[in-house]
Image 1 (cartoon, rainbow, N blue to C red):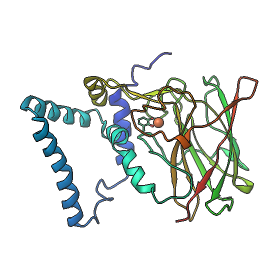
Image 2 (image 1 turned 45 degrees about the vertical axis):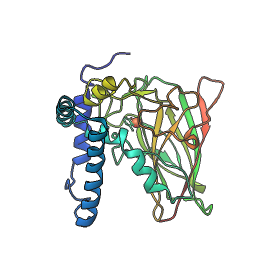
Image 3 (image 1 turned 180 degrees about the vertical axis):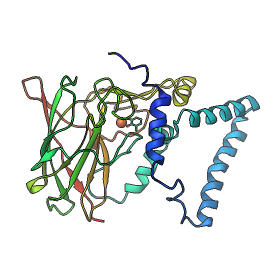
Image 4 (image 1 turned 30 degrees about the vertical axis):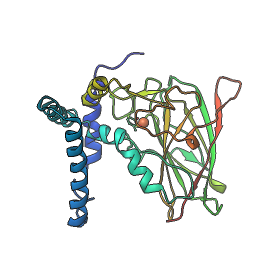
Amino acid sequence: TTIPTEATAAAAGANATAHFASDKDPYAAVKDVPPARVDKLARRVLAAVHDTIREEKVTYDEYNALKAWLIQVGKDGEWPLFLDVWVEHVVEEVATEHREGSKGTIEGPYYVPNAPECAENGVGTIPMREDEAGTKLTWTGTVTATDGTPLENAKVEVWHADNDGYYSQFEPSQPQWNLRGTFSVGEGGRFEIHTIQPAPYQIPTDGACGKLIAAAGWHAWRPAHIHVKVSAPGYELLTVQLYFPGDEHNDDDIASAVKPELILDPKPAGDGTATVDYGFVLDPV
Ligand code: MBD
Ligand code: FE
């Protein structure tokens, strides 16, 4: 595989930062948080840092290394990557603990809204290049409510990496909407999505997050995954990722985002392609 020279951490990071910040007031989400809440959360986070410094007797060299590294995370545009890899999974856990429907997981840094509609009567193919590498996958399923009602106006948004582990719009060689699509479900809430199996994914190793990983002796891998958002009016948005059995990183995902319920069970179709059935159950708002 050829890795495009422009597929740098800084390039992907700048795109992820721009996507997160674009057309938003950076503080829109926090305007209405009462000062007492900000006070409590800021104090608790700082106290956790202070405790670590005292207990571990952190030195000035270590403090200055941290300062330089934090500055570099911003320069590389890697705050979305850092937060989504090492923090988001706990936010997701807390946000969805009340649900009775399908399990979700983190969104990650590479979602782009408004991917082209690909389905007719629930059936369609994700945008891909003529010679797109990877095992072809036919994925069928149904979107229902927790009470069993089929949700016929549900939408299934899908995005995933290509066979080299790159996401369109965060790396320059792929067409804009490559491997990104919206599938409006058909009768009975059913869908049939044609795509390819993505490859395992290594988070960028040449930026600040990669530096942390190398300095700590960790690895940079996420298991192969398909990102999904399932929505329907009157129901809670489900954000999830689906994984493949046997992936060596299902048990040590750098982003801690694998749950046993999210591992698919694809079957070889005999012609080199695979089929899988996996549906979604949404909680009413
Ligand atoms: C990804 O593709 C991803 O899904 C997450 C959570 C973090 C980095 C890259
Ligand atoms: Fe991903």
